[in-house]
Image 1 (tube, rainbow, N blue to C red):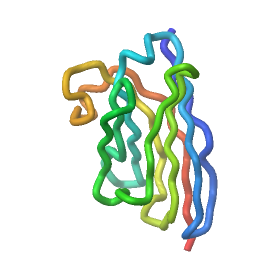
Image 2 (cartoon, rainbow, N blue to C red; image 1 turned 30 degrees about the vertical axis):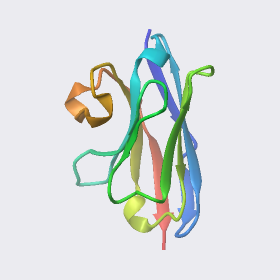
Image 3 (cartoon, rainbow, N blue to C red; image 1 turned 120 degrees about the vertical axis):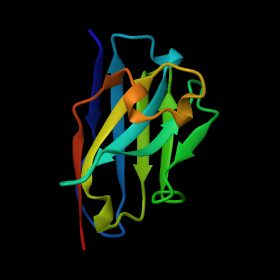
Length: 125
């Protein structure tokens, strides 16, 4: 069955870094665009970053540009999110997701086919 399992979350002080990973299985990972989303308490889920099947195209939310980097290793069926210069506004549950469609880095959350269970990231000031 399809599985997306996030890891790497935790608690960090403002200015610190974390690297999230998402291990995929049960589907043809290399054929799917991948995305990271986050949801803070009382807020809607928002897109953080997305990456095309081959990793050539990426897209970031304005709030994380220059601080976060999305990448993927198709040989390991794993997605990554390197998060630097974290601030308390980055506190949220982070989810990875997979989508298969044209122009996938622009896909809205509703288009995504598969979702992970999420990992908590907490940034203290």
